[in-house]
Amino acid sequence: MPHISYSELKNWTQCPHYRKLVNEDKLNPFTDSIFTTFGTAVHAVCEEVAPMDHLKDSFGEYEVVEAEEQLFERIIEFPNKEYDFKGFIDLIIKTPDGKHHIIDWKTCSWGWNARRKSEKLTTYQLTLYKKFFAEKHNVDIDQIE
View 1 (cartoon, rainbow, N blue to C red):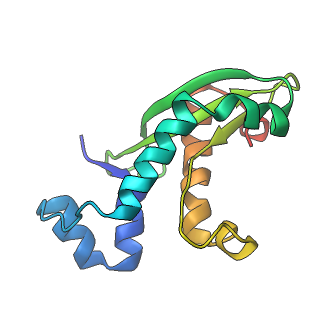
View 2: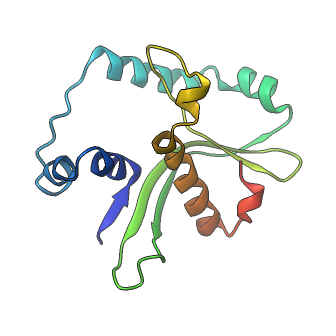
């Protein structure tokens, strides 16, 4: 089944030909670097060691709904084509007020300032996760942060 992920969308917005080379022709120029190694290490710590204290400080009481939630949901906005959205949500928690909180671990070398947090392409990932998580689990989208 044809699918699209946030990474593929990001590649397409940067250069449609690059997206074709990576996603269709499978000519992936990606190589490991100190940045990808650091990101992998941070993900491991966030998922296995440190999240509970930080989450308690940020959210108070919560329950872990899922870690590494796989999304593979039909994109109903393409009525003439059958495409699925594919993604993995790093963490979903639920607070006593009934809200689900979607968390995606991010790393960078310069910090996450307000400009970076509000970049459209960056926020698209969480927006897509929110939409397709709501559809997959039949959760009111207004109950997802």
